[in-house]
Length: 123
Image (cartoon, rainbow, N blue to C red; front, side):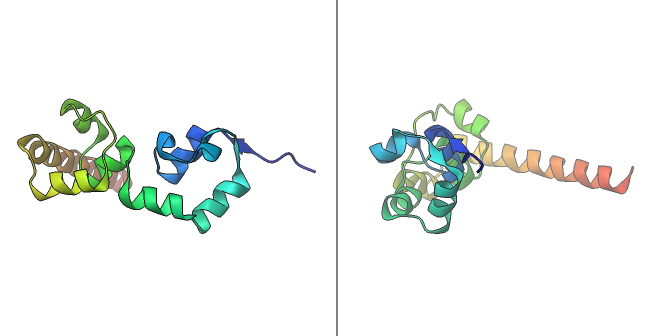
């Protein structure tokens, strides 16, 4: 019988898109099997649904919700996890750094798309 693949709690939290320090102690204190991870993804318990809904969110999720890169967050000095409410407040009344980083992020994505098309077209 094959030994089940175990993930460190940090890796499992990243795959679930949540901040490890915000998860329950029983999640943080042990390795998570691939089967457990799949079950959490398929039928998330209340604590996981609440974390995904309200945060605090890891940097990658904050960046995605704001439409910027993680580097953009760092340039703006946003280093701490943010809650959904904090993210929404930034989106509702975007500071100058957020407007600028969104523009930068959009230009980078456009350039990446142009390069992908160019490579696909063989030019």
